[in-house]
Amino acid sequence: MIKKIIQPTIFILLGIVALLFATGNGFVFQLTTKVLETGRTTAGIDDYLFFDNIEIPPSEQPQAWPLHKDFNATPSPASLSSLHEELGTVAFLIVKNDSLWHEQYFDGYDVGSKSNSFSVIKTIVAAALSKAIDAGHVESEEQKVIDFLPWLTGDYANEVDMGDLASMSSGLKWNENYDNLLTITPRTYVEKDLEGLMKTIPITSAPGQKFVYQSGSTQLLAMALEQATGYTISTLLYEYFWNPMGVEHPTSWIIDSKTNGMEKAYCCWNANARDFARFGKLFKNHGVWAGEQLIDSTFTAKAVRPRFEKGQQYGYGWWLGDVDGKLFFSMRGHLGQYVIVFPEDDVVIVRLGHRGMPDLPNSDTPADLPLFVREAFQMLAPDNET
Image 1 (cartoon, rainbow, N blue to C red):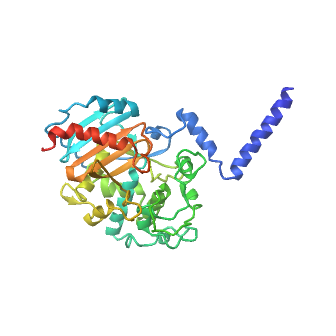
Image 2 (cartoon, rainbow, N blue to C red):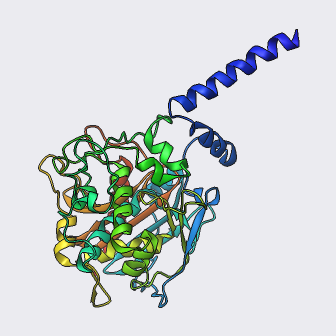
Image 3 (tube, rainbow, N blue to C red):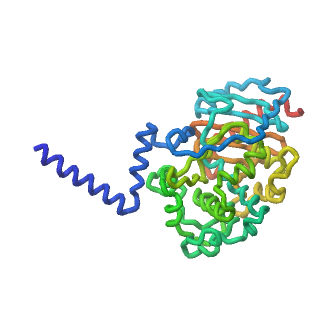
């Protein structure tokens, strides 16, 4: 009796396994492994503990953030504390006039704690394109991606350019879906041969026509920059930004595997809130850091303006919008990782945490982003003249 039950079950399981591999969904087993390992079915800000990483050193000349004269003088209102608790905030910073005005940590996190950037890193990879152009490694934003990645396929493979990748208008066949585990974005998160996977994804739509948010565009941009410069994307970003900007703590980047060592460039730089805030300050100050022009101001201006008339919410790596009439540009990541810049108010807000909220109706803005912003400006109100 037992034999009659077990044998058909084994055949059924083998059939399911064969079907998954035959349909290109064998990565489900990698997903299952990570679910069992992490104890959850979603990505998390501590995922660097469960994936292969490369370590990135701090700056050779670390630069501490100056403290505002009113640093932490204003307590968090009860409404903000409740929001932090509801969404599992681990770090909340307010930078005013390039000085730390407010800083708070939760859930055992502190100044040096690392947290997964998720898509916050996309902004920095897009900025690396400008640096590569200045260095002469890339001719211009209009240079074709196929010059660096000759294996690109699809009807429009010869047309997509580097600027299209940075502005999310590549025409890549990509479904940015975090809920369906059989789609490409969850697959790349656990993929152990990222380059091999990217080579299978074609450019199927006319590039440079409209904004379509796709993690694959940033991954391709990083791969093209590596070919253009001869350096890994983590090395480039260290030399371009992290070292001259005085990053104080070691960071890390999740890679596909120890064998291949390719950074998941669309996500997964693991750093702390203070170091995330540096990039908000850099773009607020038109690419100038400590008196040095790290990024051409022409690029920083273009990066925080929409490229397309139908796509006002995105520039070159930066999300754009307003809260109660206050214009901002922001770096955003899954589960509510934010670096939000209000240039007219000289304010940068950083929030890192375990959970976010869905987008507002008919909007690409998560519902929690304006909540954190309003709370921050309520705290700043008595100090807004200093």
